[in-house]
Image (cartoon, rainbow, N blue to C red; front, top):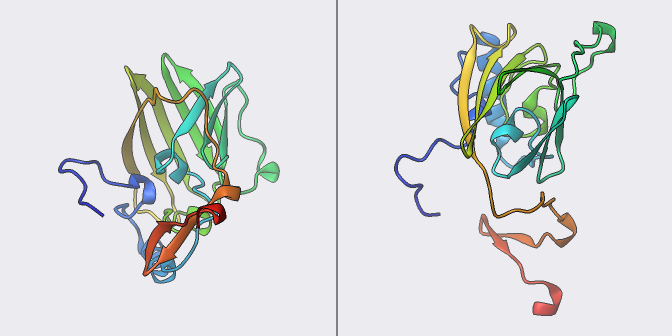
Amino acid sequence: APPRPAGSPPLQRLNGFNAPYNDEGKARLAGAARARAGRRADGWGYPMMMDAATPFQVTITPEETVIINAYGESRHIYTDGRGFPPEEDLFPTVWGTSIGHWEGDTLVIETIQVQMPYTYFHGGPTFSEEARYHERIRLEEDRLVMEMTVEDPVTLTGPWSATITHVRETAYDRMVQMDFSNDRTGNENGVNTIEPSTDER
């Protein structure tokens, strides 16, 4: 692959590799590194879907904001004034439970009960299910700017933050979902290739 242009932002900034891990966090990170080779992903999951190599669509209503990516993964961020469910009704999921509110034109979100992201996507961070994710998302002209801070008493010595900027895609008239029934990706000598369909051979 050609080198990335100078000044390009880092890829997958939400993987948490540079987070301030404590001993437990470092052990989890090392374990993930040992097991990463050859693992396949089930999708992106949260928080990685917010900085994935796929586009996503944002739909805003007074009751909730929904974010859907090209893999059909969706986040529901409730903005209808509700709080988090009682503890007995909370359980970890791949996308967690997100509650938000608006401060002017900024969507402020808190997400909890995220199933350890690494278990779903091999490039995800190794934060625990006790992590709390705080996001501030706002539109600046044609760019969506997201500031995220993660607090995790199990794996981190202190808060960890990242800022990500998305550029609005004007060429799409609708969200395109992945069609895996037409997946012709192959692998040859460790390199992905696109195999011709049967009628092209």
